[in-house]
Length: 264
Ligand SMILES: Nc1ncnc2c1ncn2[C@@H]1O[C@H](COP(=O)(O)OP(=O)(O)OP(=O)(O)O)[C@@H](O)[C@H]1O
Ligand SMILES: [Mg+2]
Image 1 (tube, rainbow, N blue to C red):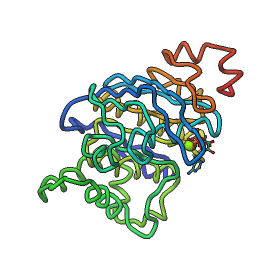
Image 2: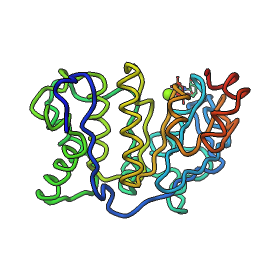
Image 3: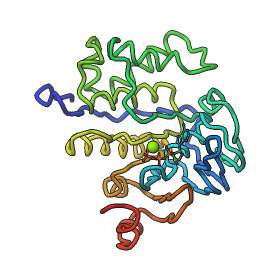
Image 4: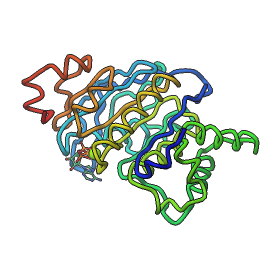
């Protein structure tokens, strides 16, 4: 269902059955403290993300949003606090351990390898996951699933990633993360730099991922309005602390909060 007429769009997202192997996972962070050298980027942060839900993480530049995702995925080692996956504390584990536990982290910045084809980029996703001694048939199935879900990538599988539009690149990095069948997906500003129409296509894709596959999604966004429109819950950070955490609709209706922290 990809749409060649819309070369810069990101159409062609299909429903796929059973992305993750082990069922849905809840994620919670409790009293998390993390930082860099003398910088305390997260100060006693507590959030909960129910299995299969979308949680928007909002806040100004430097609020600690990226650090929160890094601390969950193990790329930054928390100083204290807990990172609970289905209730089991995994704080301080390596990124490889967290990946094995089903946590996929898509960092900011559409990090595809421009000199490789779409398919080669996807294969990197298959290979990148530690401890996954997949059979060839499993790897082929993972790629087929990615193409089923992202028809636009199937159409462009032999093209260099350099030729993709910004929205297509964002689809590719998300597709690459999904081939490992994560239970928790951490997305850092997936709409950054995208035109509004393409941004809303990325948001639609995130909703479908959540609804159809039951993946637990933590969505960091500068565009608070767009993120709250699709999220179940929202968390607002400011200077490393949680200043609000509630139902997404409640947050979006809070005029003072919007004015002070959300910019809309
Ligand atoms: N690698 C680093 N070394 C030192 N300090 C850092 C580093 N990365 C982030 N910081 C600091 O940690 C704090 C939180 O940064 P973080 O990147 O988590 O914020 P953010 O909410 O993601 O911001 P942005 O909206 O700009 O992406 C900031 O004070 C930032 O300057
Ligand atoms: Mg950031």
